[in-house]
Length: 215
View 1 (cartoon, rainbow, N blue to C red):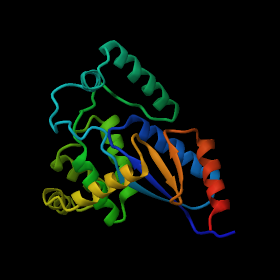
View 2: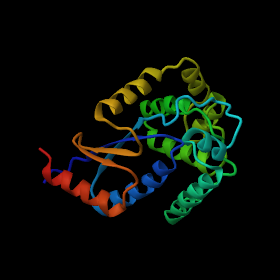
View 3: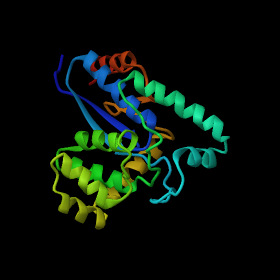
View 4: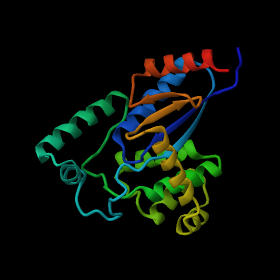
């Protein structure tokens, strides 16, 4: 059997709570699978119309966007926070800055070009859900990038120049072509699609099946 890594393309958003939960479950699934896995993240904007400096909090935002009562939103967030805790993530919705994520996606493409996409993805999710950082502004993003060893000044230049905006749009177009309308979404070896934050065992089984059935 070939030992070449299984390729997994993951569409996700920095402000998607299930994407961070799914990341942990997938990591565990890959561990259970036990063979090399190559991961590449792709951009998916859940709410491209959100202002960078949205004035309200996530509760207000979700209530307005989904047209559901505030009390119901609180219950939703309580549930997702509990599930996050079960995989070792301590979401802090009281501190979350709802924002536009286009610049964060541009940064992820920059990080990919510099061999640090996976580290950048983890740092951005932590910044958004746990640390209460504002991930919509280029200056803040450049500082986060510097934390993982990227050049802060060059990141700022790249974001200001919209160097990777076309790459973000290409990811979104590919998602549309695949029929992806929610994230996280996983494409294994370019042909097996898995939607949502599945159990680790489900991911492990899918990786094993893809490995056994590849050309």
